[in-house]
Amino acid sequence: VQPKANLEIVKLCNKTYNLMDFAKYLESQMTLRSDKDTKGVMENLYAQWKDKIVIEFEDSRLEEKYPEYKTLLKEYHDGILLFDVTDKNVWSKAVKDTAGLREFYNKNKNKYMWQERVDVNFYKCADEKIAKEVRSMLVKKKTDKEITEMINKKSQLNLMIVSTVIFKGENPFLDKNWKQGIIVDNYKNDAEKKVEVIVINKIIPASPKTLLEAKGQVTADYQNYLEVEWIKYLKNKYPVVVNQDVLKTVTAQ
Image (cartoon, rainbow, N blue to C red; front, side):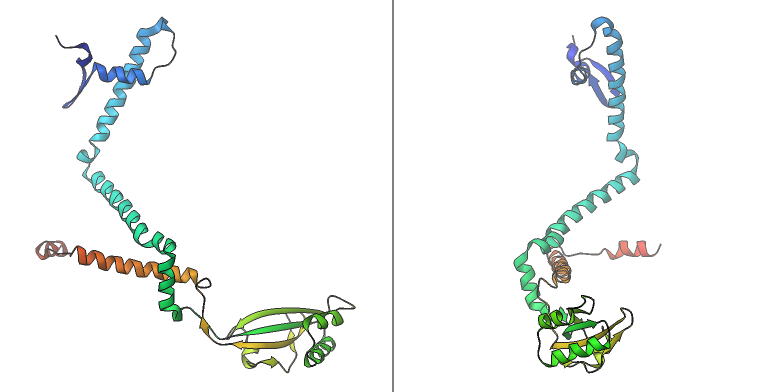
């Protein structure tokens, strides 16, 4: 006599399900229920279980029934693997490998250059009279603090000093007066309705950026470098052999 636990109750193609399979499903669905309608509850759970195993069975055969789905699934699988291994060997490595990043920067620092630039002060004056006073005080080597205290004694709007760095080519007026010292002509800034006295404190020659200043570009270039080196390594370790006969049949189509 066949044990009741092994009693076959459902068969899908070559796959069979016995009473024990249904019992395990019942155990997973156990909740407090009234014992007045045991038969109805069992019939409902049995119907749910059959639907569940039919769907699971169909899911298990999707790749067999639908070759396009199998191909798509493989593409996703391979794509995720490629992403993970590339992230490990290229993208994340470029961010985490600080020693390698610095070494790469030191070998290529002349690729990350600041152009020639000037350290400049703009003395933005309310009118030409104030600009003249400011120029006179600059000639007398007064400090910016002394100039501001004197000029803005009556109004804080008389003078504003802006210190900045300007690259060659950014300011046409400065390009024409590219030398250290006080620029001779008062520059009328029509947009701000100010008269400016401009002082070029120093000309800063072209020079490499620090790693911190160029970190974004250096990291991107280091990633490209790591990718090229990784592909070289893979090609050497796993030589690619093209089947010319098969290739001809593909290109002939």
